[in-house]
Image 1 (tube, rainbow, N blue to C red):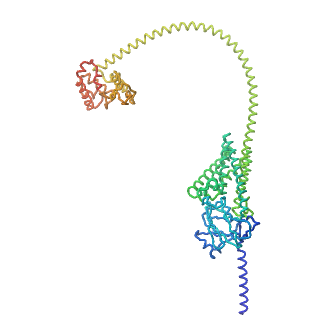
Image 2 (cartoon, rainbow, N blue to C red):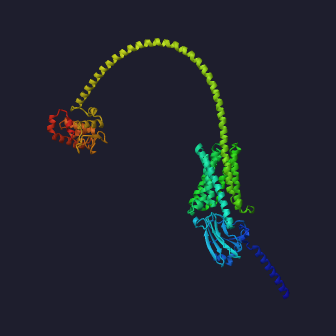
Image 3 (cartoon, one colour):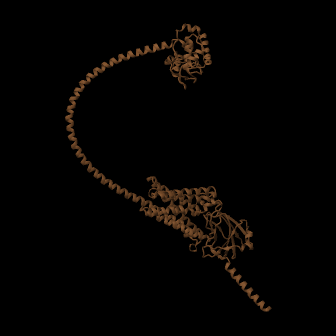
Length: 635
């Protein structure tokens, strides 16, 4: 029994060893060998293994330990991705060196949007050197001034060496690792930059041409198309690394969001161009409201991401919504019979195809493995879209020109008909004019006879008018004398002691007449400045005041008079002076209060001042006329 058990144990052990050896062999990472006849190799599937560092704290020594090294798993896709934003991923590849190779080789990271890559490069003695690169570092820190990330390989032995890469990025990045010979890299880089120049040159040519069209025709569709093309160029330069190399090499922070700003501009100007080119506002009002709503929502999304959560910018396919709305609008307008929409729909069909290809690549369809065509598929589609959108604009202009020609021909036909109608009317009018001329001639003879009679009548009327004018002149002189006498009588009446306030107010009805009286009284002998004795003045800021032309001193009309700074109406103050003067100071303050409607205390205070002034000028008042109360006014 023991021998049988021992035999069974050996069989089970051999089966187990065989199973694990087969399983280990199936999981073994593929090694890429350096060969002179292979200028380029892209690592994919089992050639690249990855590990997601969920804690983000694993050191390089821990990564190399047996416990964690076994957690590396081969990529299930041709190009593994860093799907967790700002997460830490580890990648490793195996390269078999070839010391006999005559060419120099380098490793290149093709995705320019990776923020931070730490490469652990094996050395001949078994140690590792660390090299850091990524788009969060200034561009001048790169050893090779190229849009991608590269470093040279030391191919000085024939051993298999393992390279480790620690990758962290705020965007969804592709771990596209390429082994290239230096000769091939130089040739490939020159060709790539050459085609970039053609691509961006086409964008500038299209933009410049349509800018000239906008300046010439002042149609907003050309301006929106220019801004749309420039936004596409801006987006492509931001994503392929050209902008970081040439436009803002020392602005890594801006480089992190530049692509999002450009993509936002692409969506907005695409919708505005669609509205303007296809006359959406008039042809499809509901779609016009939808476009405006999408513009508003896309703007809110952009502002929220810019101010609060820039990780939202990684969801680039959100911009498929505005472009799909533009695409659907073009189809709808085309089905309504608007012909320029055909090229618009065709152009957006290529753009839609480009987005579908990018989406399928993101989903890791194996038949779309990484290559130049698949990686730059959206750029190719952008070029085709620009071409067909230009055709759409040209088609619109051509249709408008045809319509203009048709309208011009209709106008010419109408003008010919108008000329014929005009000739017919002119002939009828000429006959009517001749007939009317004869009638007018006969009537003119009658009018001449009537005019002669009227001339005689006018002569007689003229003589009568002259006589009436002389009579009016005499009457006017009599009226003036009568008015002068009336005013004199009224003034004399006012100057009597029995006049009431109503009659007094006829001579000094308001403040202006009082100020005019004071002005004439003060400066009847000419003006002289009280400060500098200058006799020239300008009209002051206050009514009837005078300002010295030399020193600028301004004297009001009430200054240096009994009415200066009085708090009662100046008309009543005039009347009070008149009453006190005409009564020779015997009128009481109670009587003044009753006549003027002012408080008795105010009348007593103001009346006392008048009486004091009368007492001071007693000798002057004796020489004055009977009613010359103006002697009390001036200081």
